[in-house]
Image 1: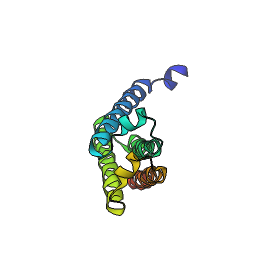
Image 2 (image 1 turned 90 degrees about the vertical axis):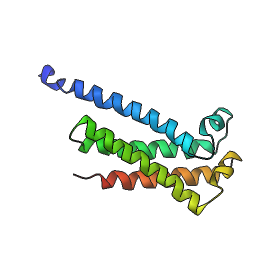
Image 3 (image 1 turned 180 degrees about the vertical axis):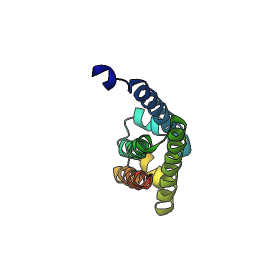
Image 4 (image 1 turned 60 degrees about the vertical axis):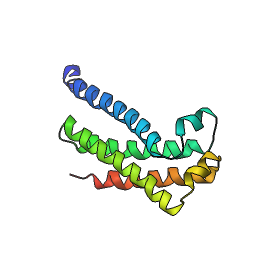
Length: 134
């Protein structure tokens, strides 16, 4: 029974490792796309950068988990992971349309701006994940 229980371990490892890499790549890419510099702000202790960046990461991880659940192969999963990343970039763009100075406000440690950006990223992530149906 134990052998059959762990027969899926290689697939688990492949999906888990790929997802971790995709989150890392997304985090680096997202930090390049935004006008504020997340990693620098986080190192400097800018509290407003925390909800903004974590919102984007969680907003990406939610559809990533849906993509894992519904993908027919690892390659299919990677394609949907890239779509999820694009949606998060769109969430940032949409927020900039609503609040053009959002990045300046985050850089100035305006926590409400960071919370707004992170919250919108979560909303986009939830809708994105729900849209990934078979």
